[in-house]
Image (cartoon, rainbow, N blue to C red; front, side, top):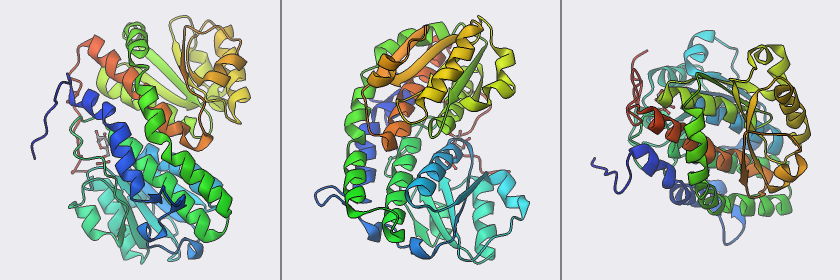
Length: 367
Ligand code: G6P
């Protein structure tokens, strides 16, 4: 296929900007906005009969799955085990035939994820895959595919495929919740409406680009960075750290904010920027108290929050990125955009090969 960068400097920049549109296409496959309902036929799986989801994936797709776990467990009361595919495939975990084996992959060709899929197939599980490439091996070998409609993704560091994977997983959690009777019709209507707002909020998040470019200039001066978050912001902290190290080669770690005092706090000093992902959700107060611990040790905080969060926090930060207030379910999808832009611009300042970072491949088809 031939895809062009258009007016963009890099494919990654182009793909970041495509998100409102491709998320909108993807959501329309699972949700009927005019009726305010899910399209249950988009998921030909009887979620009411499933005892759990056994999920695996690699890289950014794995982090999408981790966020999905929060949604499935919270909305559909459906337990999810998720593992990186390179562990899953050899772990010989006890599996039940009543579980759904779920795989998340942009390419549909990642060797470890494919091996995990084949293992689950052998064990007699129903196989579902969230894939972007419809003609891929995983798509062919699955019982059910849950497509992301991100279009071709060229930048090695995944961006639009990630937010489309999240959009699919959130929609599936609502579908599963409906089938399992864990949400009411009103809940369904409200959740579908909230998800329908993702493209609009994503467009607003993109407007923060100039501010994030300025913050990235500071970030490009450091050797290490720490990302913290709680709840669904925790896997997003992992993804933020992954994005930064992948393309800027700055060492970064993501942590659950509550784990700060179990190790990473030892690293905090004046030279350590800490990127705190903290929407004003029911974890906010807890995250702020973790930030206080960082601030007390001279750590430089880059806070990514919303209007309510910015008003409620009295902490001194180096930078505060303020998104609009938004429904809780969509925060990991919208907050992914500033996280991606931060990595992107930092890499641009570092002068690295953003679309093809050293030693990395778009699709890892060998073990
Ligand atoms: C590589 C890419 C990542 C991607 C991962 C999984 O490491 O650089 O961006 O998240 O593979 O790829 P998949 O195609 O299975 O989503």
